[in-house]
Every structure is written in structure tokens, then in C-alpha cells.
Length: 344
Image (tube, rainbow, N blue to C red; front, side, top):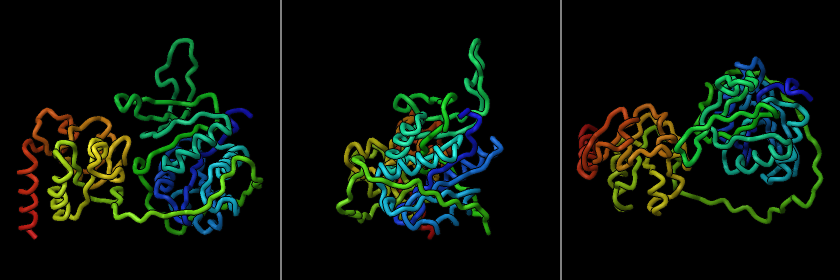
């Protein structure tokens, strides 16, 4: 088939235990924008067992069409049956673009599917646009239009690369949770629902699930926090995070951290903000003792209000902060906490 025969923007609508992952709803919002630029529609691909009732929610967040692949083999995520399901949908319906959330499941499924359908995939994208490629017209090289331009950090976050897949379809990308934004929920949505099952035959790539152990953790999900107080290596040690926790309690916020803190073993990775952690968009982000390396900034620069506290007045964090305080956090943060508590 010709490249022009591929139409539509498809989103893998990840669900676990009959709950749609938020990144799928975020991707539907972005897919709607991309589809508008291409004058096409948005399709969500819902894979699992007894999941058809979830289609209503996908329609409410922007899906014009939902393809449901429902089979007993898909009750729990396993690489081979899910790859077969999504690859079969791609081969049957020929989408121009396929977006997958860069979750633990998506990072396994996306590359496997792209290899199965013989196309490329750009991982951990931070921006998606429709445009020309090459971006700047070059002599003796054809400039192709309406390409998916996939932007992601490269070389450890020290540069930004824009990647395209001009000669293969679909154009595939994984996107980290929290990078894109959901649309407002649509009332009384209307969407076409298509039941599609390619058939499943076990092979030597099927794994057998012997047991599922669900870990119960008290760690908060920093993606949901409206106020984050984030600590870095400048705090000096894990015992000093209690100072940030007191401020967080006064503000009704949560505590997060930088990669250096996680690498030192002071806090769990679930609390890490940054390129290799989570991308957050709180209303208020207070960075304490964080230098502001590009890898960290990539995970929090979309916050509505950024406040930096650091004793180094040349720290890069001040370049992205709306307000900066130069000084020792051990004096500044308790002072802020006392002031907030006295006003309650």
C-alpha cells in the first residue's frame, strides 16, 4: 500500500483492572489536535477482556471511534497476545499515526509492535507536531509535508532531537505520562464502536502467569498533586526532608525529589521528578536545594508557578523560576512554614 492510504490517529488506550490509565486520556487530547491538523479522526484501541464498557469514557475524552479487541487471552497484559492484537489492528485499519503511553506496559508494547509492523518508533516524546521534514529545506532532498515531528531529549538530556519517520507508516511514538493534557470531558459523546478480534493461537512466545502480587504502597502519586515541594541533593541528607514535609503539610501539598536524591537512596523513585522520573504540572512547584539540571527541568517546567530556594545564586534553577530566594533553606523554609501556620 502507498503511504497515502494510511489515515487517522490511533491511541493505545491502556487499561489495567478495567481502569483506563490517565496517559491514554492525555494522548487522546493530543491526538485530537494532530487529527485536526491532518483533517482526519481519532481512534482509541481498547484491548483486554470484558472491557467494552470503558469505551464510553474514551469517547468522552475525544475518541471519534473505538476499536475493541476483547478476548480471554487479553485478561492480563502479556507481550505476545497484546502485540498480536495491536499489530493486527494496525495491519487491518492502516493508521497514519499510533501513540502509546510510555508506561511500563507501553515501553514494552510499543517497540515490539513497531518491529512487528516494520516501522520506526520514537520513545519518550515531550512534544508532537505536524510539519515539514526536513524542517529546513535542503538542496537535493525532498521536503515532505504533514509529517509527525516527534521531539524528545537526547544525549542524557543535553540536547533536544526532532525525529520523523517519512518513509514508513504508521508513525509511532511513546509519550510519558503528564506531558500532554486531557481535553475537558465531553457531555453525551457519540463515537463509533467496532468489535475486532484477529483470533489468538498460543505459540512459544506466550508466557504463563502463575500469580499476580499487588504491592500496597503508601507513596503518594505526585502526578495528582497541586502543590509540590521538591528537594535535591542540596538538602544534605534524608533526615532534612522533614523540613520540606512540614512546609508541604502547611500548604496542603506533597513532597517530591530530584534524581540525585533517588540515586543516593534518600527517597523512592516514585517521588522523582525529571526526565528519568515523572513529568509534573502542579499549580505551585517549590524547588529546594535543586541546581536545575536540564534533566530535572524537563519534568517540571510546565508548572504554573515555580519558586526556587538555593544558596547558589548562579544555579540554573533560577533561570526557569518565577520567584527565586537565595539563601540557606534551613532558615528560609521553616520561616515560611511558621508564617503559613500563623495565618491559619
